[in-house]
Length: 384
Image 1 (cartoon, rainbow, N blue to C red):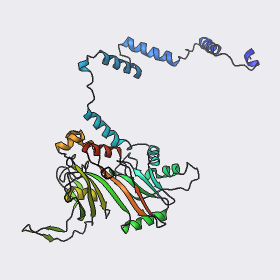
Image 2: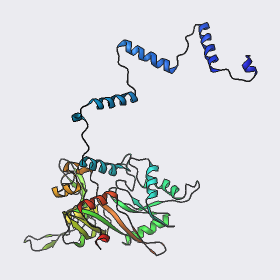
Image 3: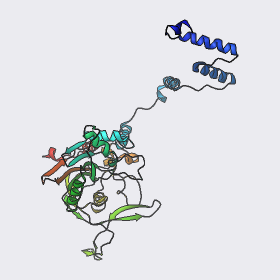
Image 4: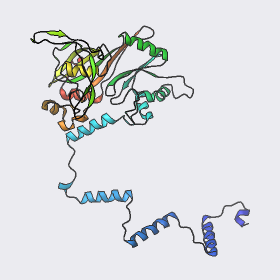
């Protein structure tokens, strides 16, 4: 045993290296190369064979910067235009919470709670996030999939928490605004019963392309799902009227109702109009898929801004906007596909389990406010 080991001391690292080298020399074994020596040897071999060594990421970045510095001003990257900034902003907004980790979405929703009591929680649902998980949206995180994480956050991250959140009435993926959640199974049943009796009122705010005439009214036209044939076959919701113009054109004739059509009733009121667009309040009395979008596009011929599905019937294409509206929005027609649907669940009213009325209003999303300002549309409180 060495003097070091007798005193309980560790041997210096340089002695270990030397002893290993001596041992290797005695046995005729080649000493092991360190990683850095091995890398240098590989580089030397490549240089001898005429092969160019691979650049490290940091070296490559430096080389790109040097090349940019050498380029004359005329060849440099052009300055970003207002149009490009606008498109980048819309892209970032519409995709900001899609394909994110469930914890990221749960944290966002936790900050977006509009109301809570012992029975209910109302959150501000962001644009582009589906309420329910769907097999067709692979990789897209839904509201329902993060409810266990959100409920734990709302209960202070307790280990043995009995706090739970259950979905009641969902909103469509492209719709933002007030979304209702229940804290117990019996509350879910209470909400569904209220909804069946038309006692859950949701008022939507939409921005439309065009001005509805008359400025307020009720649309009572059934809606049905139909197949659109052609080069791009697809399905859309469509109107299934109970009346049609008579042959003389001076009246209407009742037609037989389609058994597959769903009764759909929407009350509407124009809040303000400017530059060929309108801010409209909608209150659906029935809950049919895409009901408000179909009624605005096909019954009033005033499609919702950013509704690329129902702005055309026979094809799948981005919404076609008038030049005047494009100018106000600061966009070219070729970039309109990035424009989000301007459909917001603005106000939610229902009767709680204790018979007290609950009414919650949702703040306007940033993109909605920007569009209102660009189109010079005035909010009701500012008008008054």
